[in-house]
Image (cartoon, rainbow, N blue to C red; front, side, top):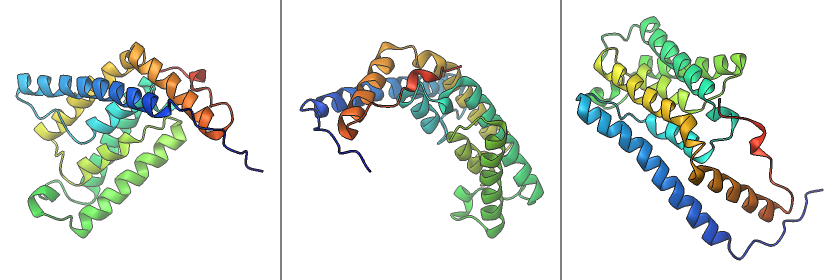
Length: 201
């Protein structure tokens, strides 16, 4: 029998707004650091995989997927599978989807294989990290080709991952996490899951 939801807290909207503001500040800070570093180095460090990686560390700092080890292994596997897919499908010299406007059937196949293998390998090694799938797709579709684009992707991710463990220790992140658990408990009528059971290591 599904438990009846308890009455929502009259302050739930205020708490949500406070959490959203904290997430905004922390995410903007992390991505901003990557952007400034990219400008200083004159290198394309901001890629679409930086955003979801920062989101995991900021919004879910105490979950298993946001552990430093998971992020490192996740993106490492993704880079490897992405490059392997490009090589196996003969796409080393193929233009990226940004140049062609749409993926070829071969690129679509390479992207599918790269993402699938990444997720499968991370399950086998027990190191889930969802943003890694985005990294695999960027490489398989040629958006992060070997050379400056790929190096920039890796450097940008390295900065975010290096900052990741620190984010979980920021009072803003901890308080937001606690507030979110409280809201979850109020809406479901049952205790919120204890996300402190894992550590961000």
